[in-house]
Length: 299
Image (cartoon, rainbow, N blue to C red):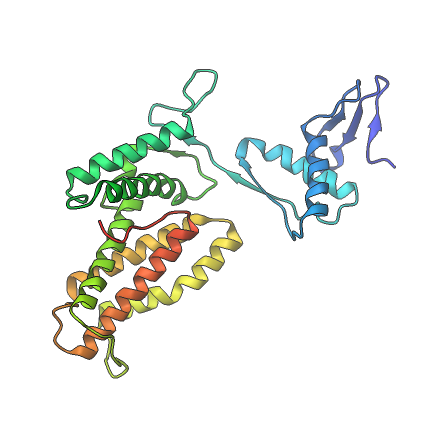
């Protein structure tokens, strides 16, 4: 009682002034529902039908008010999980030309955008010689990996709550904080490991080796991975993982530049560096997989 009230025209409302909000319509005078009423029913069904602990709505920040009201209403209706409802409020994506608006026809079709990204990735990769010697099948697979990886990474590396301008050309760059840069580094590591295997190099006991500065920095970064994933989960921020992987890749490239691997004559030192390379590749692959991005074995 007192949670809702009916007006003379038969419409049903909730008084939210006590929560610093306004009066919210729940049923129209003809008995038809509104979005809010439907969301209340859907939330109840989700908790009934699935063994979930928490419900996270991933919806743009223009819906902040709607989900604030939904949480209050679910709580009032006696659903113990109402207050725990999470609206993961993300920012808007804009194009270099301005906002995407359906009324003005500037909305981009996702399929068209993805197709464009893949064809751009193909031409950029070909220009840079990264597709040399590959079959048509391999070329198509890598172009798709790079194009979609560039798109996903560009969107996910930014704090999800911020508005961003998506620039397709900027995103497909084999240098800097981009998906293709990370993918290329992964392919480079896999190439080193393949060559080591072809030359019969075994990873031997390297426990007596004292790691150098570059190696220690890389070991410390690899050890941070589990805590970064945990923090990303707690804060609902894939950007933490994206930027961690980028930082790891930069550290590996410095290590690769300064430390000989395949030409190292001390087998124990070489084994340590091969092990570090292998672990770095595993973490890059794992981090990118969490972002929904695949990495190529060769490029």
